[in-house]
Image (tube, rainbow, N blue to C red; front, side, top):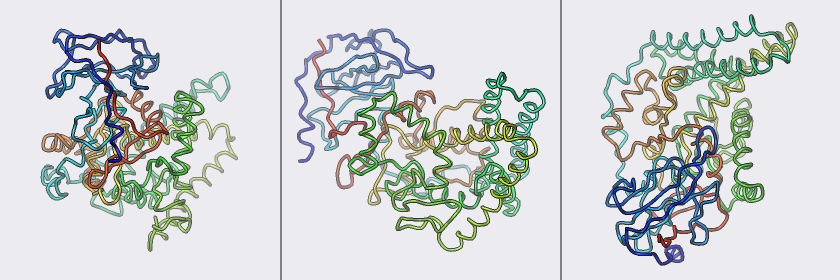
Length: 506
């Protein structure tokens, strides 16, 4: 039994009336804030909520750890205690968000080691092997039929709104912001606002690439090609690679974009070594900067974060493909060259503009917002498919519908939902059927939530908190379980997985 050593728990102190109080730091979008002392007890007045026979403490977002069988409460760590329904004892449940799950103990029936960090999903995706996944046809039948109907006029209106907002912010900046260093903060603010608006144009082109914009294919491709080319995205190249991403979501080797590094392999080992050598904070900061600033260009040019099956790829030169599986097979190679024409034309236009108005003007008005478009794009994609307790699956356990239901919806709220056409808050429905127009996606999402509450994933964690958790904790994946129970989950430790350890609650 390969996991026998992991199921040896330390002795526990019986009884539910014992209380342990801990000081903890709360991780919030603004950073770390000192929380009130957390208390855990088995009595109702302690603030514990009943969940499947277990008393669960619900603090705010916290990062927890168990070290040498002792619950630590250092400034950046704390422990959440839950009352197990089997023994009536307190068990440490490490978690990265303020909702704790009952932890499996030495006498539970699983061969899978206890998971260490939980997101706001509360480990909901970790029992995928125990769930019954419906067929694709069955899932589609639960979505109202009118959700699949495209309205070309409405799609054009949304495209126009995003375009007007983008161009309008640029015109205002050009007219009212002097090109001087004294106004650098104002230009940075402009880049954030204009980039955020421009992301709406990116999402409209994304809909075109998915055949969700119009039944008029020529109009659809013309809009998508124009908008993506203006953002230096090779339209058909991306259309193909993104279709592969949808067809292999959370596939360990054949996925496309944000495929995790594997512990024990070169990149996984490098990541874990870097974390150990510089510490969690600097590691997370490097991850955020590398992903958000350089991630998108690196993906287009080298296939960075793509699956190992395709190796190094390039969205501009289709012959660059070092893996066994071709990213651009057959006629797609010609479409890559067609995509290049649009991007080259825009680059030539930018060069002509720079020669006339100066590079500083082009950098301020175009490349500043362009950078933040890329930030938004990577942020969305990263958080839609990655978290501490969302597994990846090998070929033998993976299926399309499993991958779709391992997608995560998150709370981006009204402003960003409007500007970005709900790309982050209705993404599960988008992966179930990508041809659903964004203005029908909310209704489709509600249908999926109602019909498949045990499969639909929604994490209420604030976006900044979730982003930090993913950057700091999702370092590499390692295998959990065996046979049909096999899944690959994230770890931030070089040592083998360890079970949660019961501690004396006195």
